[in-house]
Image 1 (cartoon, one colour):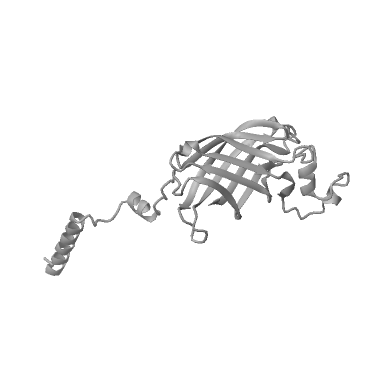
Image 2: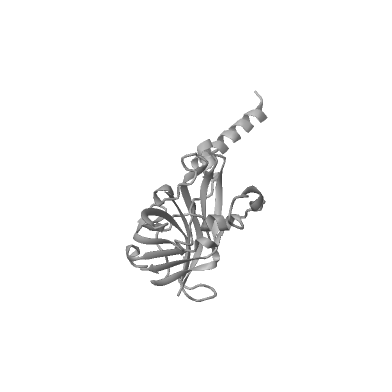
Length: 235
């Protein structure tokens, strides 16, 4: 019998037994995978700030929308001029209200092509002006603002749910937004007032509002997806 080999085998067996007793055995594939994943951030459903009037900090905000383009991509545009005012009841979030007013003439698309060359019959100078003023789109000369007024704010999995009325092109229809609370501070490092940040998503069909240009042809999507990222400062 090989004494060295037997001693080595016995030592290995004792080591394995000790590790197992201490919970130090080799992890299963599932456990190893779980250990490799970072812990999920807890969903925030409350805002740790004083109650009161909060307005969007336009220096730290982005309001955009997406619509399907010819079945190939999601076309993205943004608005530069808008206001978002929140009357926050931090103790009872259901008593809070949200008011959004958008200037459609502030639309920005980043269009870099030859607009006049590709739209020779257009009476507009550029693509943004076409989107803002054309009766096919926002018709801003007749309807100078887009407005969202909340009707209900309530806690929901992962954040908050805001239901409200969207007024566009003289029509008003209900829209629901999902709100994720990114963070909050009862005293902003610079302003020393309450501040919080949110991420918002939602959507609606544009045809019920009368904006149905190229929907039936399948060239532009009917569904409009909304996205907003922004910080709010106590007023």
